[in-house]
Amino acid sequence: MITGASSGIGRELAGQALAAGESVVAVARDAAKLADLGPAERLLTISADVRDESAVRQAVEQAVARFGRIDVLANNAGYGVFGAVEEAADIQARALFDTNVFGVLNVLRAALPVLRAQRSGHILQGSSIFGQTAAPGFGMLAASKYAVEGLSDALALEVAPLGIKVTLVQPGPTATAFGANVDPAQGAHTDYDATVRAPQADTPASSAAKVAEGIRAAVADPNPPRRLALGVVSANAMREALTARLADLDTWAAVSEKVDA
Ligand SMILES: NC(=O)c1ccc[n+]([C@@H]2O[C@H](COP(=O)([O-])OP(=O)(O)OC[C@H]3O[C@@H](n4cnc5c(N)ncnc54)[C@H](OP(=O)(O)O)[C@@H]3O)[C@@H](O)[C@H]2O)c1
Image (cartoon, rainbow, N blue to C red):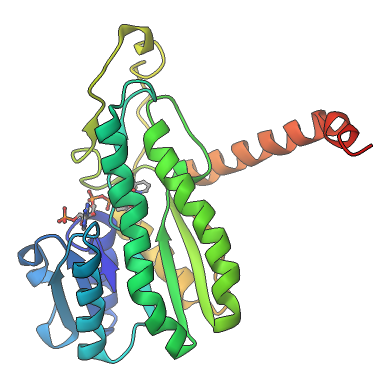
């Protein structure tokens, strides 16, 4: 079952699963965009907005009614807001969280009873290079993805004893409609031109097909990772961010320890 299956990474994931002979429940806001994904006998298409809890519940009910179980759940639907933290309007920040965080939670609350009853399943949580790192202009997106990472770390520990696996999917820049769907912050201020709107070196984008192949490799593995960086840009950024965090811990260890001395 894949949310955000109409475009980009979700669409590739759905196409590859169908091509491999698997059955797919594809979800997007307009199911008309999903009809051409593959053969109707193994494809169920559903119109549901992840922000609509009852629509998501109905989608899960339809999935189970059709296929009897959910083996893999890709909680993939999402979009971005671009601009300095101060520049994003309250309504934009809240709307982003409605899809990227509360939408993810809606999908989890609807599907987890099914996975718990099965005592099996693999949840792929849609994170990002901005799930553990951030850059000027990406604060709101990173806030939503860090939220997904935090809840997923707890979730993974909660559901592991119930036979359910959780993997945070962390693509780097990927050639999809994501950029075109970005909501630009409403309150642009020239003070942020030098950071947020500084000319960027052209970052090579991974292909959505290769990203989907990476995700499928983790699904096929009996011991999938908690986090999966996809693409060299993401992997390098994660390594740099984690190294910097360790350096802070080490440099400030005396102050940390003095608290309990
Ligand atoms: N592309 C990148 O560089 C990149 C990098 C890191 C992480 N990611 C993450 O990968 C995931 C997929 O993004 P993508 O790159 O494939 O972008 P995309 O091509 O824009 O696809 C986004 C998908 O999300 C769906 N969606 C958005 N809002 C929705 C809502 N409220 N309800 C239901 N579906 C909704 C869209 O479906 P409809 O609009 O048809 O409903 C679409 O299928 C996102 O979570 C994104 O944050 C992308």
